[in-house]
Amino acid sequence: MARAVFPGTFDPIHYGHIDIALRAKRLFDELIVAVYDRPLKSLLFSPEERLQLVQRAFADHPEIQVTVFSGLIVNFCRQVQAQVIVRGLRVFSDFEHEFRMALANHRLAPEIDVVALITSEEHSFLTGTTVREIASLNGDVSSLVPPHVAQALTRRLREVGDDGPGSTMTSLRD
Image (cartoon, rainbow, N blue to C red; front, side, top):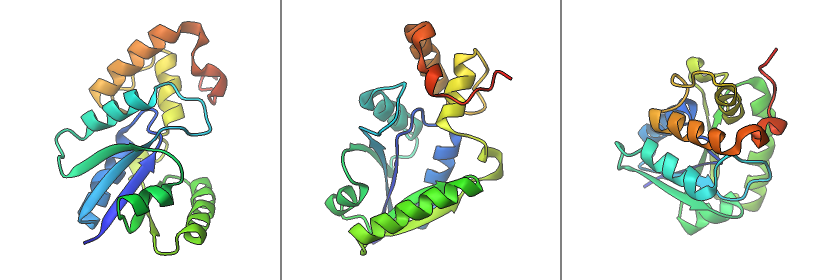
């Protein structure tokens, strides 16, 4: 039985992530969507909030497990006895980053393979940063994220106000 892990920060989860997870589920017997709790980047949502948003995104897919993890992804894969790490590729620059990560993970755990799925065309521009910035500028993100995520973004951005995540975003204001 092939068990795969789809790791990410999911800050926030968007339709590109959901598409990759649903397609991965067709390829593997079991899929675990793993929310990384301590990435080295600024986040809008806490690990608990991101976990809840991801769980709700897959509420209609009980065959997809959702959990939070810490540390190296290969150690988590070993812990849950997964043989595969699933990653998504949007654009050419993703390939170089994912290739380096796959090589490093292979060095650490040669028994765990990495499978990269090419994103669906309609999601090729979509990143958590893009979603956060559009939402922070009062843009409509309803075509980018599930309704509960759009509501959570609105609520969080209202809470953080002008001290929000703008300093880490690529500007869409131009």
